[in-house]
Image (tube, rainbow, N blue to C red; front, side):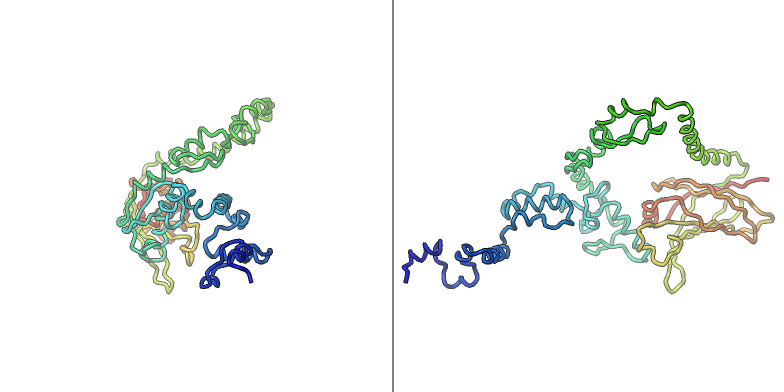
Length: 389
């Protein structure tokens, strides 16, 4: 039988007390074979020990930054990880949007309880609620949100603008308020095009290689016939762009021109599954009575489940007329809205038997459509030009 001192030498350390010996791994386990060592590591991880460095980035599907952060945390251990987390990373989780979990890029809105939402998510929540005929709520606390109940948080907007962000070209970090200018004007690795692109050069590359490419570019030495083909294509594109403006200017020379502000108000159909549609009050233009109707995604069943949303509208003549009335018309944004509408001119011949146009797409993208849906009413401006024969 060995003495206490000999027992401690054989075990490699002081003998563990008898009471907790069942819960904690003994020193002899750490000094055992490979299988026993694995058991020690497992127990150590259960007690809050750090994972080995090789296991920190084991998830191959994780984003590169997340794998690097995980690897650094594993190598530093729990104490080092807590100290190595930068202030920016801690602020990131505090200032991020509660919906998309990303830092806001523009305006920041908050609910009455202070939860933050970026402008895009805030508008999307309001648009979804309009499509579902529900009251929009904060995804965190479920309090009601609307444009009148929520306000912008300027302090958070300024704080986010000062946080560092990585340039996607040179990987250097800059304050978010300066990043856009750096990427557009200053970054030497930003993607740029050859100055001879107007005569057909397709080259794209980093800015620091632009001078070398332009010195070697073969497009300035093209023959006149080759350049004429390129110029013809450019003329065709320019002609299409100018056609709309020329059409508008020619319409302005017509004798009978009328315009008015229109307000689309939301309604619901009487079907078993109600659908959202918009309609304006009756309006008078060119001594005739008109009504405009609009629908979302061509009245599909669940437009709230679609990430791409569109609005289409229909012009209806309510008055009785003695002879067919040929008109051109277009919708533009109202004087107090910031919605971007690409003007398109439509033509139709109205008569007592054919007094409704087909539904025509309102020329806006999905983001602008969400802005309109999030608003209480849609305010636009209607122009009608009567074509005299």
